[in-house]
Amino acid sequence: MKRRFVFIFLMMISAASGCSSIPLTTMYKMMSVNPLELEPSEIVVAVQAPNGIVVSNNDVVIKFEFTTNDPNYNFEDEYFVKLNTQYVLPNELTQEINLDSKFYILQLSQDDTLKMLRGQELVKRYRMNNSDGGGSFNLSVESVCKNSQFSVKNNELNVFIKLNENDEFFTFMEDVNVLEIGEDKSGYIKPIRSCT
Image 1 (tube, rainbow, N blue to C red):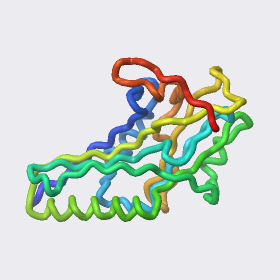
Image 2 (image 1 turned 60 degrees about the horizontal axis):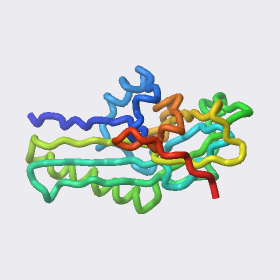
Image 3 (image 1 turned 135 degrees about the vertical axis):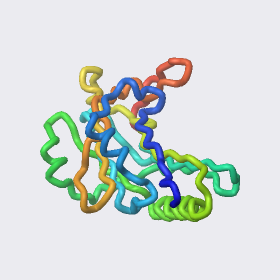
Image 4 (image 1 turned 90 degrees about the vertical axis):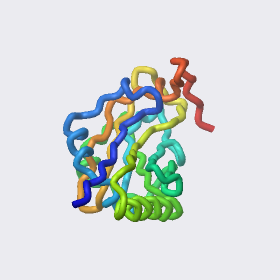
């Protein structure tokens, strides 16, 4: 009987993951998810941001990696999710809305949807005859910009995710300080850029 391959979900905000809060219920839920069984077109990311913060195309990244003893099956894919301004907010998100914030909905582009499907099939094909290998599937907020309404007293994001069209959104990360998103390995915090 073949051993089930386990992916690790990494919940990251660039190098500053320690500055956000990941609910225990989220950790438990993510541990039970198999990335190989996800339908890429059904993955939806929702970022709740203060009115002074703007989330744009390519600010949020999904990374899907797989490493084996056979380099022909190794890959490190990045998908820069795109805004979907036509998406209708479901009840679980409308209940989170307040006067000081708004939601940005992001999804994989058609090209990235196909790219992720190819990655999933590659892993499945390898796993048919091999038991080695490891992978990761993670979501990160790489950048945002500030507008004239920005305030250091209201600078935190909440990130929600939906993995299946039949599921509800659930909190992925909360209280993400946008001032620390650009922190690099040396600890230097890059100033948040202004929206153009």
